[in-house]
Amino acid sequence: MTSPEEFSRLQSAMSKAVKAHWKAFLFEGILLAVLGIAALILPPLASLAVTIFLGWMFLISGIGGLIATYWARATPGFWWSLISAALAVLAGMLLLARPMQAVLTLTIVLGAYFLAEGVTTIMYALEHRRELSGRWSWLLISGLVDIAIAFMVITGLPSSAEWAIGVLVGINLLFGGATLIGMALAARKSSS
Image (cartoon, rainbow, N blue to C red; front, side, top):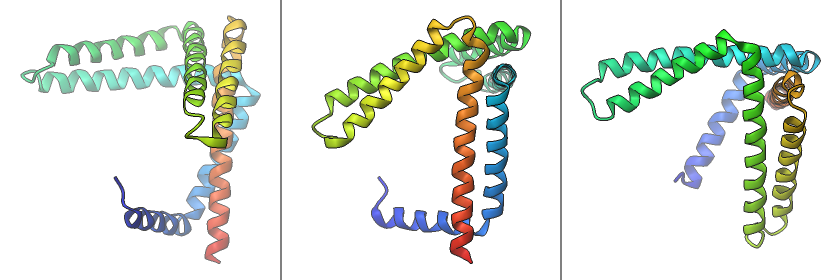
């Protein structure tokens, strides 16, 4: 657990870092916002780019896992580590070999995730509505939005595979960029 004093020191250090490097945060925010807008304008291209990126991530992490597993072959759990690393390599190769089909598969997984997340959030909100007082309704709304997104993605298959990943990544990048821009501008203003 972090004590209130430690949390205050950490918050102060973060504030100083943002003030000292507000230009870097501003640049990163603008870059993320531009990428988010591009993803929203061209969601099929963004979906394909995310799939290819994930393919490379799985492939590289799997190869790294195979190397690390080989070096630690005398440790317990060797076979499980080997299987895990091999599956990551296989997943990466499949995503890279057939990225268009992989976009459809990832969209199905995305829809299932939003459905599960929505149901879980709603159940949590209903179960803890006494402890959360007025805030439980926001969790309930969040869960309903997740289910609505899942419904749109799943019922729209296979055509939703063209836009779903790109749009959701675009929205995420745009909001993340806007947050960084706002944070950088506030830090600039407070340091002047």
